[in-house]
Every structure is written in C-alpha cells, then in structure tokens.
Image (cartoon, rainbow over the protein chains, first blue to last red):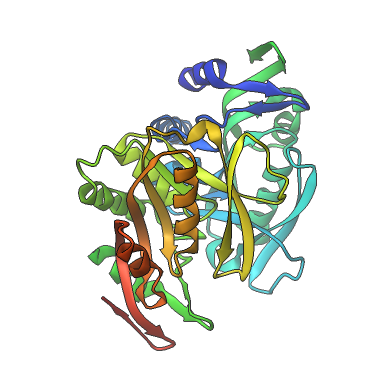
Amino acid sequence: MKLLEERILSEGTVKPGGILKVDSFLNHQIDPQLLYEMALELKRLYAGEQINKVFTIEASGIALASFVGYVFGCPLVFAKKSKTKNISDALYSVEVESFTHGNTNTVVVSKEYLHAEDRVLIVDDFLATGAALVGLKNLVEQAGGTVVGAGIAIEKVFQRGGNRLRAQGMRIESLAKIASMSDDSLTFC
Amino acid sequence: MKLLEERILSEGTVKPGGILKVDSFLNHQIDPQLLYEMALELKRLYAGEQINKVFTIEASGIALASFVGYVFGCPLVFAKKSKTKNISDALYSVEVESFTHGNTNTVVVSKEYLHAEDRVLIVDDFLATGAALVGLKNLVEQAGGTVVGAGIAIEKVFQRGGNRLRAQGMRIESLAKIASMSDDSLTFC
C-alpha cells in the first residue's frame, strides 16, 4: 500500500537489533486517517469472506483493529497480556514470545468473545517472527473458530514468520512488506 | 448519551468491589459502531475548541481515542505503562494508581509527541477516582501543553474523582454518568 510505504520511508527509523521505529504514526502517536485508509484496503482484500470478528492483541494492535472492525461492521476483540499464569476457566490462554521486548507473555481472551461459529480476521501492527500471530490463531482455534486470515500493517519479510505461516496455508495480507533494512536503507518487496 | 446508557443497562454487570464490567462492548470486545457514535458526540461537545491532539492511556482507552482522533482530524497519542522506573530523558513520566488492579504504574510518553503548542483532549473509557486523568493531565503539563478537557465513556460519579477535578476547573464530559450502582441496580445522573 503506497500510502503506508511512503510514510514508513519519510518517518520510520531503523534501531539497533532490527527494530523499525514507526511510533510517529502507528504505535505511540497514531494517524487515524491513515489507519482508516489501511482498514479500507483490508476490507477490499478480504471482501466476500464473511468475517464477523476482528481479533488483535493489546496494546498496539488495537487502533488499527478498531478501524478494521468499523469498516467490516463487526466487533473486535483484543487479547490481553496477563500478569499471572493463574488462568481461570473462563479464559483461553497461550504463551507468546515477544521479539521486541525479549520476554514471554501469557496472552488471554475471555471465552465469552470467541466462538466456534466465528470467522476471524486477525489484525496486528507488525509481523516479524510470527509468534504473536501463531498465538492469536491458537486462541481462535481453542474456541473452535475459523481464522480467515491476517491483516498486518508492516511485515518484516526477512524475519520469515509470514512466509512460514503462508507455507502452512494461512492467508496473510500485509500492507507494507519490508524485504531488508539497515541503518541507512530500507527496501520493500 | 442515550445509546451508551442503554447498552450499559442491557449488557453491563456489577462485580464485587465496585467494578462495572462492560467488556462485551467497551474494553475487551469492542463495538466500533458505538464508539464511532460516542466520538461524534465528543466532537459536538468540544466543537470550536481547536483540539489538535487526543491523548489516552493503554490499553482500553485506545479504541475510543482512535475514533475521537479520526472525527477531530488529529493524531492521538497513547501513554504507556512502563515496566521500569529507569526512565530515559526522552520521556515524560508520572506515577498512576490503578483502582481496578490495585497497583501503581509508571506511565510514560515520548517527548516527541506532546508539545507546548498542543491543545489536548484526554480520552479514557472510565473515570472513577480520577487517578489516570490526573496522571495524563500532568504529562500534558510537563510538556507545557494545554488540556482543553476530557472525554470519558463512563464516569462513576459516586467515586468523586470527576467532580473533584471539575471543582479545580477542569472540563470533563462523560457520556454516561453513574450516580450509584449495586448488584441489582444501576442509576444514571
């Protein structure tokens, strides 16, 4: 998506350790007009798929997922990072490693909000190793629901998580796909 | 706001300890159409105030703040709960007590995204003791910016934080104001 790629080139910066900092418009300060356009693009890509739920993870997936839910006319649900491993019967839970923070979180969602009849679009701001996406997919499957696909803002293709999941049959649409990046250059696929 | 009050009455439940559970439409599962209507109501209430930034705190304020930013045509910024007290020079920080979780968080925002010329609308899902609101106001003031007011989804008026801040001159618009609640009843102001 041209609009997003241009924004990454003009405002993104590459930090040591393979971190792309885009927090001027995507995940600290947020440009809601841009995110609305991104949501419309995901609606176009997943037209006719009868998606009835958008699913993301706190915190930085929530803004994009909100607009995606709005344009699809369906609710969104965000999974929560739990401080406790003492999980109740009322929750589905899964362990997810964080590439950015270098730790593992227990991620939970209430059983009230994921069901067997759900056709789910998973939304997130970044796809790198794919750990968060695998975790969210696992939660939908625990509920017996169907993951129609994923809608991602920025995929770091060189970290391979996306293509590994596509090889397993998962549909993933990323609005910007970064082939490689270093301190002074960034190329899209 | 009638639409929100009706939704609270039909789906909200009161939990021990004065917790109002509205996570079927506001802060776990989210109804984006409802939140968009709420954002339009805040736009009507704050018309002409030249707001150029919406400010909230992760995680459950982000969805509403996203729509508020969208209808005001300005960016939103969300403050983050920091795991470390080791705060860098690049951040404004403040300590905020959580009524719901019974702990204290260091809340931070990058100095890049709050400025002296900003006219800020603070947005959050709940207002109870006012601790989060005081913390967010403090962060805007550290940057030298102006807090035009607050836009809150649900105010628990009986916990008095809102009226204490109004008495100090802060404008607060809450879309649903709960006068009292118990296991089997809930009344609006």
